[in-house]
Length: 285
Image 1 (spheres, rainbow, N blue to C red):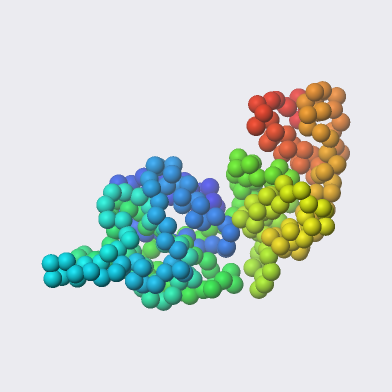
Image 2 (image 1 turned 30 degrees about the vertical axis):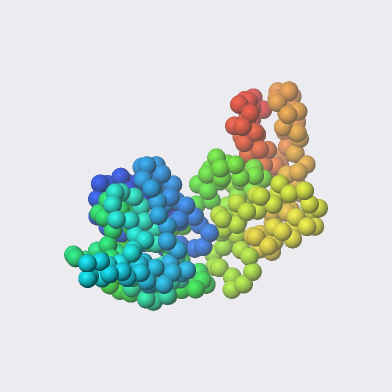
């Protein structure tokens, strides 16, 4: 399922008054699974509670035991009233006993002391065995109680989001020009690799006042060597673009690049600039 369809689907689920199913989102690292859940929850005005399961022990979900009126009660951190969205993050990297505790939350058996109110939606996230992360498969009974969705990044959808989010226009233009560079087909065993998350971090690097050699090394540290080679070649061309303010002074006569890649870069830069400045550039486009 692509990310736009996923967000629409989650909005519909979260808009329900009571939980009808718990959802498991599987996909490669850095695709934005947790962020998409949070955005869908915000769209329906529901609070979010996120628990990073790899950092937990089973007792962290159940809570510490206390004695009240001669009976054992659990000081659980889980929501006990109202409505919202509970994210159990990175369940595929959690210890086996933590996965069992998550199973009890999803199961919500009658009379259980490990349950959340029906107004709280439950979403689990995790990577796949092929993603070369710390991976522990979910048990059959747990999978059988979940709505299982596989999430994949769509480059043009990500580029649209990135433009709205203020990601550097050179990055969004590069992904539009070379969509296959957004992610890798197979996660490498070591070293950095491109993903929606790492390209967002690469955008931050472009704003640093460092030399080209240092910039290249920093980019390699977030998107990997192969992606950096292509991106730096693109940057070398894109940085020869005419000044946007000069274009807007005389859009009917300003020079237009011949290379399609430069037209992509310049169009994305103009789009971001005019969005921020409230100026028009359609005559030049």
